[in-house]
Image (cartoon, rainbow, N blue to C red; front, side, top):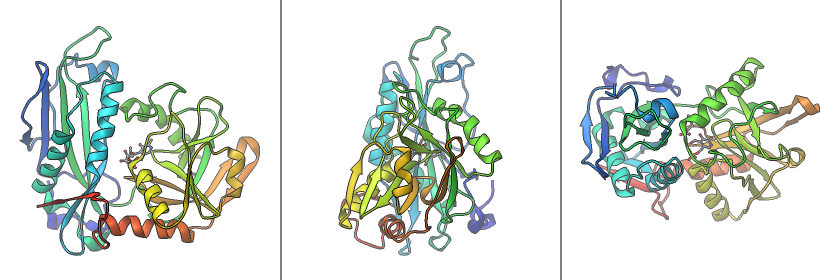
Length: 339
Ligand code: PLP
Ligand code: COI
């Protein structure tokens, strides 16, 4: 394991760097046990665990930041707890209590605080909670045992070029999720299902695939592993669809947009509307707010180019980051200060 002074904080990218501790909590005999702190990176597991065979797995992603004031802030962990609960309910897993999740995240950040990138680098500590079915079974049914494990790793930009505009291609051959499927929860299987189109997009020179709604293939659903938004006429417009993951970044941006006097619309965005946007972007914990430069739809000979970074996207980005870094008052209590 690298010591903090061996890490090149300015060139982290979105990759795994080992940190000293992870935290685990088992659900056994119908109840959640006490969380325990671990230094090993591996998980002892039965080969018949339900997560391995039947994909009984859900995960989360959230970040902690070191502010200019050196205070450590964990962003909206309560919302990730709620989304993990909703994933667990849908996938028939034991539902971790919100307080347990938040307590585990807070403790993990505190234990690994030396590995939170310095304020000046723009990096963060990314927390990755996993909920997995660990009970041994061969029948297709929910496990009787679960493990909630949270590890963390320092990260930089998700897209290698950072706040540069990305190029995206509409994928008309693959869906990320089914119309009444698991798109609205953070099931690991959704991401396995997206690898094919992600690879095809990259082979064609794009940064990301854009998914259409799987029912009609008329409307924008998501931009890779991030939500989509478009800006026009002082409006923040974002898709509303059962197959879209309810993004906590998007939820925060909708609030910030309202606070900035914009109108927020959550509704279908037909592909034909793309050319009317003044700006467009992808948002998520990993992607933060990434401006979109181009969207191509080769099947329809369609292409649109946006200005990046557009002034509205820039304003949203600045306010969002300022809240996370403690540079403006945290009026809605989104941050937990970690000792
Ligand atoms: N959509 C997908 C498919 C994602 O994987 C993510 C990442 O979590 C998001 C959207 C953004 O969600 P959030 O802002 O909560 O990270
Ligand atoms: C996140 O933004 O936290 C994500 O989960 C996206 C991803 C890297 C899968």
